[in-house]
Length: 85
Image 1: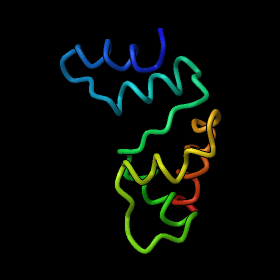
Image 2: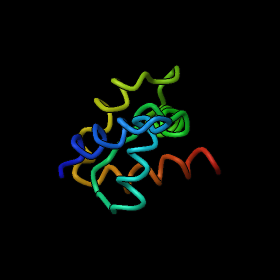
Image 3: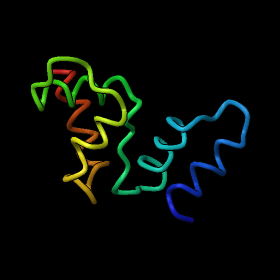
């Protein structure tokens, strides 16, 4: 199944939303090109990395990180790390 089909399938289960499905794609299925743009840690990491004045909205996160495809899952880990340090 492609990423969108997996997310749609998992979101049919009560209690599982898009974020949870994206984490499953990244960490259980090892998909290399997932950008969880609604994740607050990702948004803060993108804000710091790209010196944005405010917290980016999910659409802006996807636009700013488009050039990182097809390795956005790896980039996500780095965005989380930027916030931790």
